[in-house]
Length: 352
Image 1: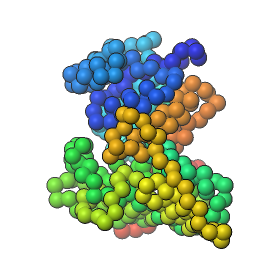
Image 2: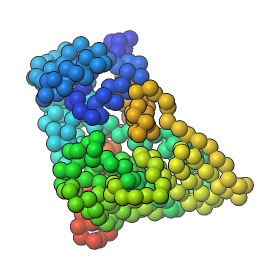
Image 3: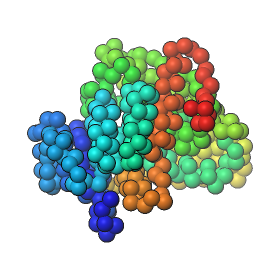
Image 4: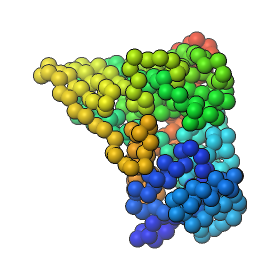
C-alpha cells in the first residue's frame, strides 16, 4: 500500500450505469484517488473520465495492472466478468473491491475468494444496502434492546418501479430477483439477525419478456433463539397502492415491543411506554438520482468502511469476500428450495 499520508490510488473497472455513482461516492471519501477508468468500450471510459477529471481512460487491462501503478481496483462491471477480473487483479498483487453479486454461482464465488486468499490480497465486496441510514437506525435500535428479543421479522422490497429501463441487461439474466435484489435483502437479514440455519423459498415469473424470476418469498431462521424472517422481493412492475422504491420496509416483533420502518424513512418503536417516531433520511448528496437516493447515498458509507479496511490492518470491513459467501449461500440455497419446494437446513461455517 501507499504511504499512509497519501491517498490510495485505484482504477475503476467498468463505465456503465452504476459506475458514475460509484465514482461520485469515492469523491466524497478522503484517502482514495481514482487514477484510471477501464472499459472494454474505450469511448465509454473516456466519457466518464472526462466527466470526473480522471487522468487515464483505457481498454488495455494488462497495461493498467502493471506493478507500481495502483493500490486497489474497484470492479463495477457485468456479473459475467467478475471472476476473470478478480483473478487477474489478484495475480497482480492488488487488493480487490467487487460489486455484488460476486459471481453467477456459489462455486465461482468460492474460487474468487480462494484466489485472493492464495495471492495474499484482500477481497472486499461492495455491499452497500446494509449501509442505508434507515437500516442502520434499525440495527442500532435492536443492538440497544429497544424491543427486547426479536422473534419475527418481515423485510419487504416490493416495487412497481420500471427497473429494466435503466438496467436492460437484467432482462437477460437466467436468475434475476434473488441474485440481483436477494443478495442485498438476505445480507440485511444476516446483518440484523445473525446467521441463518434454514431457508425456504418460492418464486414467480410475472414479466413475460424476461428470462429470470421477478418475485420471490424467502423464509429464514436466524440465531440460537430463532428469529423467523420473511423476505418479500418483487420487481413485477404491477400497480401498487404504495410505491416507495427503492426503500426497504421492515416490521420486527420483539419480546418487549415492535419496530417498523415505513415509507419516508420513518422508524416507529412501540413498547409499553407508547410509540416513538424518528426519521432517518439519506444524506443529501448533489449527485444522487432522486429515484435511487437512499441506495446511492449509502455507497459513501460503504466506501468509508472498505477504505478503512485497506488502510488499517486491524479493521475488518463488514463485507469481506468471506462474509459475502455466507449471503451467497443463502441466495443459492433459496434457488434450490424453490426448485424442490423443500425447506433446506444450512450447515454451520465449521461444516462448510
